[in-house]
Length: 174
Image 1: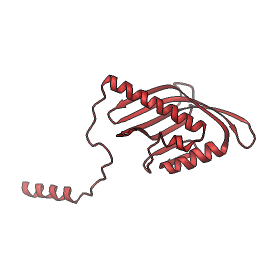
Image 2: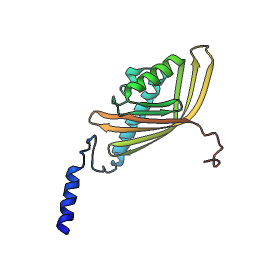
Image 3: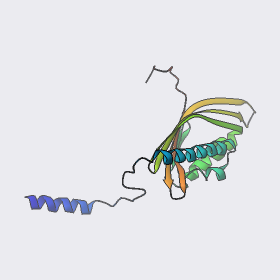
Image 4: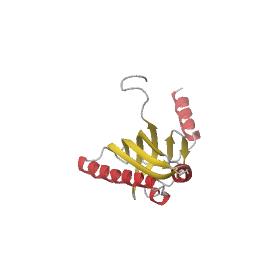
């Protein structure tokens, strides 16, 4: 009976489809505090570049921040973009470039967490813009989480999820 179970387990493991290996497979230890601080500083620089890329609706600058891959994603109140090509087209060109004539994204209260080859940033932002169609100003406030992955060439943004500020007062609602 034990031999049958061993043979069955072996057959199942051989029949299982191979999964594409896309990144480090072992858990990575947390970085040394000095290293984590330097890496957090690099990510802060990327967040500043990200904000400038939004301000200028600049896909060339954005390509220095984002990983150019169909695997990246961007969740926002108007949609969910999959892949850097969709992000360039729908966020940078259509939303930022075609909708607004002026834009200013100001991240604040930035917290960065580095763990091996992964990191995430969380922050609040203020966005001031003018609509292209009539010059009317708009100001919005929100919060954002960004996920970064470290590559041999440096950190790259792989996911953004942002939303407006909560409608309910702190401590109330869900």
